[in-house]
Length: 172
Image (cartoon, rainbow, N blue to C red; front, side, top):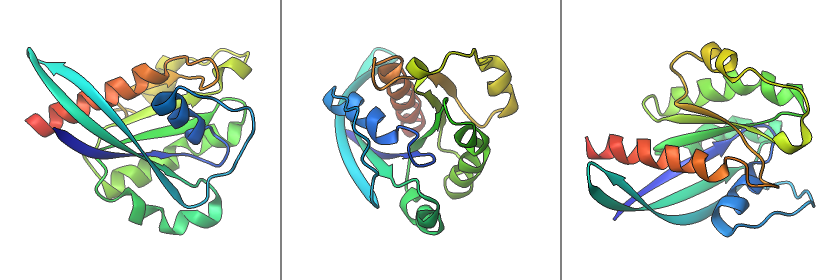
């Protein structure tokens, strides 16, 4: 069995905890509860690469997004095999801080794959040009998804892509 750590990063209220709860427990709550510190969830997965089936244990770290917690972020990012950067499509400030989060992840774990989750698509009415946004991050991210923890949009696909890329890198 392959076991590894991933970390969800993003500003407070972006939906990191909701994405994790939807993915791990298939639940969603309308009630907002701010994460305090770090919480860790576990998901057992399977992925097939070159006709070989691998069983994996994804340890998913949910890190508090408040600004006063940021000075100690780097301690929690160490050892991560992948990242999900989460932005709230209804709050421009969270979109504006995507680059800062990507830079921090790359500084700590240079080769770890990063997936971008543009969350709360169910509440957002404007169209976002994913190609233009992806181009603005060059080769820094492996995928970009418009997600909704509420209606499950692309939540599984986001984590499945990250799992696949991490297992590929481990098996090299």
